[in-house]
Image 1 (tube, rainbow, N blue to C red):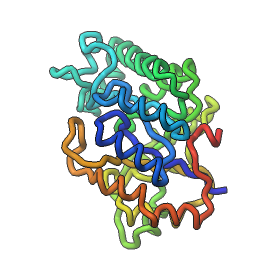
Image 2: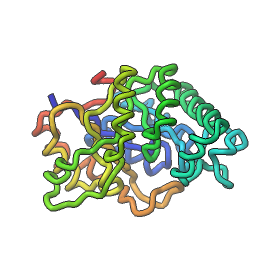
Image 3: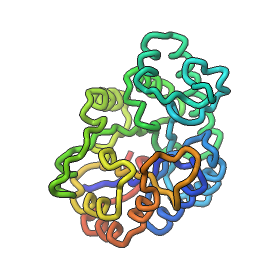
Length: 279
């Protein structure tokens, strides 16, 4: 059976993102969204999700480049001079390994984000992390341990087979992504051991920010058997705080509502839903 979860990341980042999520779910193929609980438009995202009971919502953990849930003063090893989570992922990963205080702050922040999600009252469909930082072994361990206390049942594993990309776009040379690192494989093994549902593959890594209508339709036409997560970053427009430079937000929204995408899902006979629908 071909099972498909189509996810929008950064739900709550801005009104433009939230508008696109709602439109893509009502009119297109979007089935799930990952909520940034402390982002500027998180309250609006939660309100929209409550009006869309068929939209499966999960937690998009923010451990880099955005707003923490705890006061920055409680996270001296994790935040920058502006009170945002640090951008230097490599150095931050080293600090987590070297500094027990940083690991304690990490656990506290992850717990605070799970608590904030629980406070929304929304069912927890899945968990992932901004910039896929949960593949870091220390972060993964904290997420698995803490998530178990909050009913986490599914987690993203960022592995994307190159063969699918080449079939979808012949001649392409996709750039390396996290799935070539050993950490994603380790995360998969640990998640399975914990009894969590994980996707067999995650599409959207190599073309993150450039999941155009043509690419999404082509990927869907070549959808393999098993559970696939296709993730996107839709918005009705750019120009909002926290946007990623060069991302084609509106094009990704267009891909989710395009007639070609809807037709491709129907043609391959994929069953769509959230992770909780396939648990």
